[in-house]
Image (cartoon, rainbow, N blue to C red; front, side, top):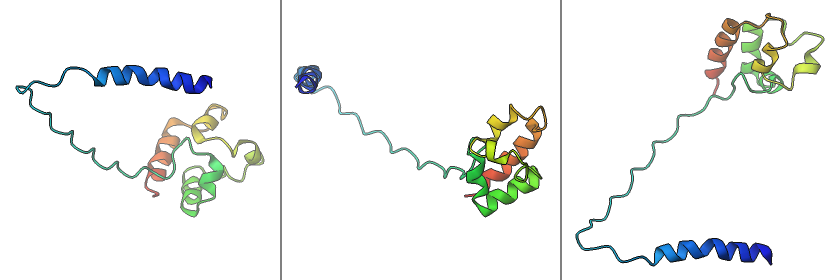
Length: 112
């Protein structure tokens, strides 16, 4: 019942504003806004994608093996596979450099 009352209260200002004076003849109607352009297809993987999701894709796994050899084979893989590479960088003691991640991001962006 409270939800119904709240919904009714929210509609009152909208109804009141809809009953404003009619537009004058001197006011020309505004043309509709152009439709937004179709967004570019987003990359399938980013540095925030969980590593296990990247590894599950053959092309994604190839990118990781090329740019970060040995990462998937680490004994700690099970501990960090659910986080993205950006998050993993903070725990890598400098072993995952900005340059390595930039190259990996570029290669991942090519996978659609």
